[in-house]
Image (cartoon, rainbow, N blue to C red; front, side, top):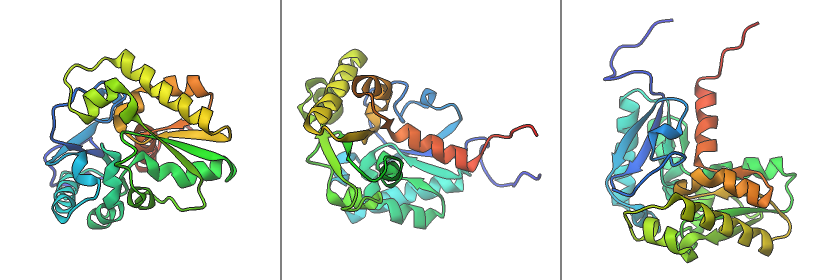
Length: 238
């Protein structure tokens, strides 16, 4: 095996697109490097999730530039820190020629197959008013996949910290609110088969959600781990 010349650093195969903000991050969040069992490379994106509710050519170009910078630094796969980046799923994958996880929602078609193409897949999103059909379709969803959406905007601590930029995150409060949102989904949808946490700030609490509802839970990190596995599968003795 030969090592190619031309990169400023080596050993980081997964790149993360992250907005240039100051919100507190904890392990489990894609914005915290200790989340991953493998090295990752961050690339800052100027803007915020609000720029991705409807999108614009300006934010599209900013994302494309950031993704291309990651490719130039040698990464082999890219993950979006914000699920609303799925608005430009196809654009970023096409521009870089790299596999791109624009949102945890890209797992929806796989989950639908895994659960027998029946029941309802619950989606917990940061704000139900910001997640549009375009984000879902950009992730591979279609009308045959039955979904139910629960927004975290009604959860006071999440709203304070994530939506309104609060500075003092209480992980216990956020865990309780995320579990409560999952239980709301289950009460409203008796045929719920799985839950997808769209907001990457919630992946820390996937275990709490799984324990609360006793169903499979998918998030940004499960998608990132699948991508990493595909790029660098483990070597087994034989």
